[in-house]
Length: 427
Image (cartoon, rainbow, N blue to C red; front, side, top):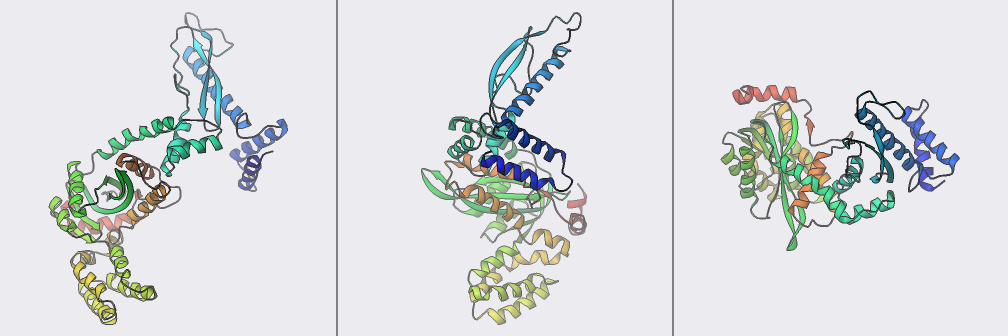
């Protein structure tokens, strides 16, 4: 038995537990059969490949039986005029290697199989495997090598490119889809990705996440910038959201980019612009010694958790007395940002928890960086957006994701309705 087969057996045993389960029992039976027949479980000619062929072949025969109205070995119904007419050999690529099938034919030539469609050389799961690897940041060459090593399947880079290019149509539809009329909360942020456009350069990718009236988070848009003035580019991005149906935003949380609040209110005049508190704290720590990060963070937390604006001002005065002489730049940073920092202090805790940070986007950005880091750089903007879109489209199991329900939303919505009235309740 090969090393791969031994690992498969160990994995099945580990998962079985005291009671086991149907899937575990099937896995154990396959391992025992492979051992008894002296064949490998995986790889070319392996037992999984044989089982896959058996399943696909049986599915084709079942489809033909459904098409004709009778099964193999039965007499055709009177007056049907159509019957089986041999088969055609066909090899398809699957996740366990190349599988040779005998596709049944009917006399009238009207049989259209669904499991393995005509002219298809790959089953759907194989394409999904390629797209999944692409979403994890592998290049076409790395995907080609991975499929050859793991599945013993030789594919060309051109085939990998054609499979991933299918995502472009889905991406285009996603980028232009209509949006809700009102979003109580919108979070915006940006990351930088290396893109080759003549020469490799760091380019910003702008991301907007919205929380709708039902408390569902979704990525509203994603745009590649030139690296120029961010606030002006954000105005273009937000104008696109308005053109796609977003007529009103109650609270928009963002970082401290100069000129951004003016860009926001140009698009949605009634929007409350809230500076991301976490961004502000992190920016402060850049000017402080690491030895002081702990006490500074603790002191600033007392400021941004104050019950009122007046209380926050009093607590910040204490912070300034303690740290102002040592770190005057931190004091200047907070004084400059005070107008955009304080709006959420007027809200109850339910709303504060939703808007005080853009961490929901930052957790997504962490996945973006994981997918883009191994590539080094992208050949163009479209390749960049394809990978990032696939990250958004593929939520992680049992992990926090940017899309999904907002915790404690019912209380937050009631508080928002009190503050924003018909802008919330009139929809």
